[in-house]
Image (cartoon, rainbow, N blue to C red; front, side, top):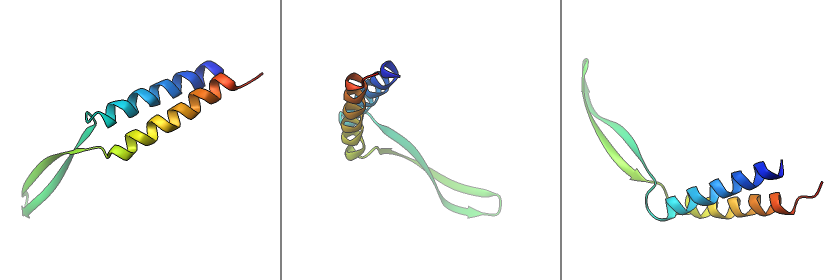
Length: 72
């Protein structure tokens, strides 16, 4: 269980740093107009908010430290 917590913590820290560095984004598709079966859509790339990355770093650090400090 200790190793699992440490691995999950390190993964969360890595993903948090990746998002804070500006690499996290997702696509969102919006329907602009629809007439019958024809529709016009637009796809936008949106950045993941920076606070999500910071939260990932903090939570990952807490989980990793808990994995290291946990006693059997």
